[in-house]
Length: 113
Image (cartoon, rainbow, N blue to C red):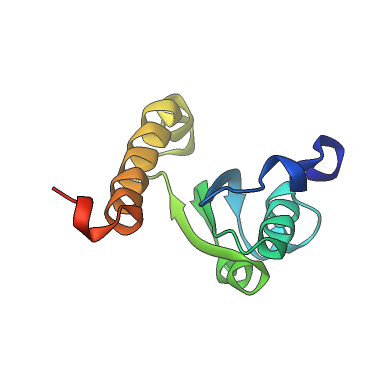
């Protein structure tokens, strides 16, 4: 998908990219959009943060392919149906936490309050 959107041009000048998948695991190295995003971002030295419902066995392999960090949206153990039912609020909470972290890391020290 990134190749069809002229993605490389669209991300020029970005400080960071946040991308998501339902599940990230060892299979994520084989054809998922997340790796296409990471490849194009890496070429421009843009860090990529991944958000997923589930970080499963072998997910750490994505770090060797341009993903800087990965976060699961799960806040506590839940049945899969419940996780999907609350996925919107879980994604929002995870994104807000990432934004807080980025704000602390990206804002110049002289302008932090």
